[in-house]
Image (cartoon, protein in one colour):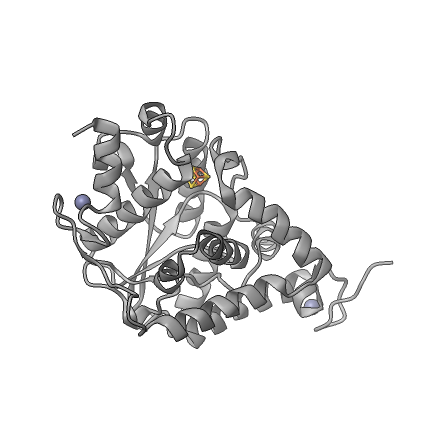
Length: 309
Ligand code: SF4
Ligand SMILES: [Zn+2]
Ligand SMILES: [Zn+2]
């Protein structure tokens, strides 16, 4: 039997399990935008006249991010959205993402800024993976470090006030558990740092979708008809994140609300630890002068490993 929307009695297209809401298409769109708006307001992520760099990848999360922000920011004509795509150089994957990101941004009348690993670091991610030592980290460790820097560099160049990324509730819960498993409590603080505690040299980063699940973003992108691709990255299977994804999916299925509970635990932990001794802020990299947590920043450490300087 067709279920009925909890809000308006129209036929439902989606059951949001962790809020126990059945939603028709129109209420799905409305409540999704509203959840993003509330999350932004709760943590004061954005200001009325911000220049907002929006990290886009061609995938469903960043498509949902850009579309929901576009709707929310209509109420703030002084704000500006600047979509930026970081092209890591992953053949057969990022090129597809670039295509859909172009379709999405042009449908919204926004100009897409593109930065490439090749231009910034002299190597594509595919090159780096070929050159890395046999006993080295997984591809995602390199990719994550270099992409974060690339997005920050682009945001500085574009004189942005803030960078918005499409990390959703599943991503955030995985990250918190990954840091717990690695015993890296400092990173829990760093990744949950609110906008007003950002570090010099880093454009503050915000995650407006952190209270939407992966299912929410897929269903939103699908029903709104946003262009996105869902080809998996060829390196994704190397990540610890993948094991956690499977585990958390099972937990969320058995106990809806698990992801949200982990997210809130991460926020509480980082608030409690923020001012503790030993939670260090960044210093400066000896080689490139960018913020770093040790002698060399992580980008220079990667380039040194690959290039052997
Ligand atoms: S799965 Fe890993 S390598 Fe692929 S784009 Fe994501 S972080 Fe980069
Ligand atoms: Zn409805
Ligand atoms: Zn450096």
